[in-house]
Length: 275
Image (cartoon, rainbow, N blue to C red; front, top):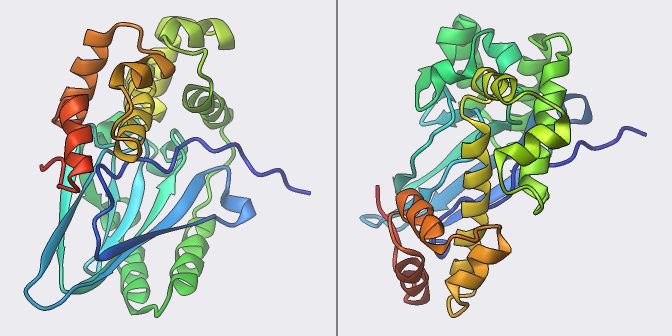
């Protein structure tokens, strides 16, 4: 029996109360791709004529392959929040790769595409344009998944032990509350700090400190959106932030509002942030 890899990303990241008018669905990859792909996702919406909505996201430390408006693109790790505006009816389909797992496809440091988007054709040539056309015509998510997984299988890279190591480290950053500093990682995995930094820049595209902070802020935002009356200092301490001013600075820089203002916006069902 094939063992399902431990998740390396959460399901957090959508800021505020979920906006009405769109749905977000997640789908597991086939077992033979699960070491490289975290999940597939589909955002779809159906709005009345003239209506416009938006959703603001705080990205994961992941590369995504995204089909939007008939265009297939490789989206590197985004360090800043961004807002997607949608109107009418439509869908966006994506493949979320595990942190570190896209380097064997890219054959270059993943930091080269951090905060960048490139056409899939730049990476895979005319075959990517053909895939985009077939996916755009696909009637449902099962067909979308089948098409993109067949495409990836044809280009499946040889196993890279560093991908597995990065995955184990990132999973620890996500799940282990005893890890609150990068020093905890170097001790846990018996790895030199400079080696760890180089590994993450090459394979993940951002630093291990950034990944740890982003995952904790994802959780903080989710808790404050769900439990608006809960003291933010309690949330911060629960997530390993023992310096309250540090938590406020990190949260405000990432989300655009202080923890108190964010919780109040969620309580009023207001859009808490904008790009």
